[in-house]
Length: 305
Length: 98
Image 1 (tube, chains in turn red, orange):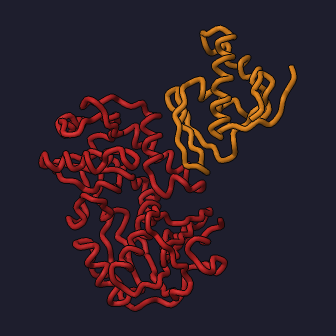
Image 2: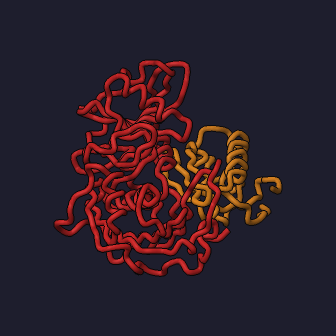
Image 3: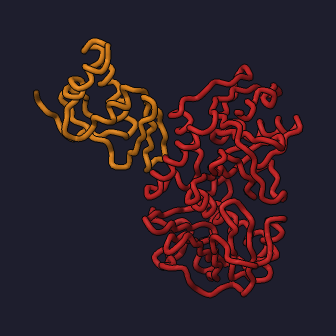
């Protein structure tokens, strides 16, 4: 199946460049790691839905944003209707040296690197929850690339903090990210997200940053915040609660597997490998075997001094 | 897959990228987004799979680096080559008689 075939009626007419008819003349700025991001071309209902979805992260346009996202109209007839019952939704992606193209439910998007990282999003949704979902699906991918460009990464993980330092819990679906997050929450921890978190690698040491992309648990509304990263832990359900150090290579493999979108991109994989190797070398990494109802939270290693 | 012998010549598939780290290798197969960690012998096999040298020549090159006897080394290398080929990391390009 070729790019877009599953979502678009006319895949060959996918926008060859960022342009089209904006939905409106509204704009707002999103304070999210990697940003600020300017979202331009919004209709009033779309702005309202974005503000409702991203409470505490939106502000008025004041100065130049780091990344601009332009929103354009697309007629409903451009998209195929899909029965999504029992289906795991994944955006269709096509990679090239200068752009990543995205196709999904009522969504066409492109991320371009010339002259700077910029996003273009076409949809037929005029507002409401449907529009907000389309935007979030696009924004997750854009954020992954923006963080990579800044020397960080978006990682499929649970992020928990005691308010002073943070831990990142990795694992594929079913490994226990939500379960372990809930166990930490019950011990008084704050869960940043049980789905996607940002890792930043400033000179002062790795930091785990809050993103507005949560699963069942997480704090979407607390505004941008980051914490020193104490450890990266690969989750394994087991018979005991214990930590085993991971080799750098094993940690890197887990991190790469947890880096959605960009880990499929042949044009950016060397950058991803280099970034995540730097992370694996700069923070303690463990396999965390845990039991349900156990003392997972109590054995998380402290921030190295 | 045809049987693997000491005369088999392998090369890494074009979508395979890897990094050597402290004796191990992290291998990324792009088309499947699979990530594997290989030990030192496995990492060496990836290094040597250049599409020109046979398994026998790999063993010649490795025999000076490892303590194990040649027969054991040959068995390990053939096993690794088979597993990596099975995982889609290597492909057979030729048979090269000694």
